[in-house]
Image (cartoon, rainbow, N blue to C red; front, side):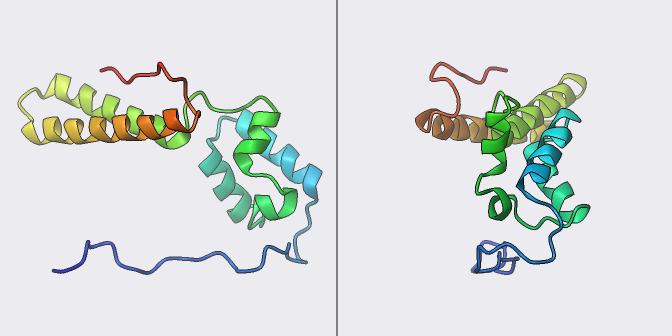
Length: 140
């Protein structure tokens, strides 16, 4: 009743930034894996999950001293839009497609308004930080 409904549990990263001894990969191999997975069409979050779950690499930054997005920028494989913003834009487009088929769905119209508001807020944040061009604007 008095909480935001999200709870307080969640995983935390280990305190140490030191690389675990059991990792078999060196820096160059990890960078090659990141580039290969990006060329296969995976987004940065998907790359991180795949490296963690299938290759046993808990932290790319601990191995390479670079973030995943920094590696992609150096290799020329960065995204046009930041991943979170791109996901929201795709969600808004999906809701718009639904509304074309179901124009009387008032709940979907409200959800579209809320999603577009999120897009505008996040775009404003990314414009201020220089992640997207100053003239980028979301349009239906």
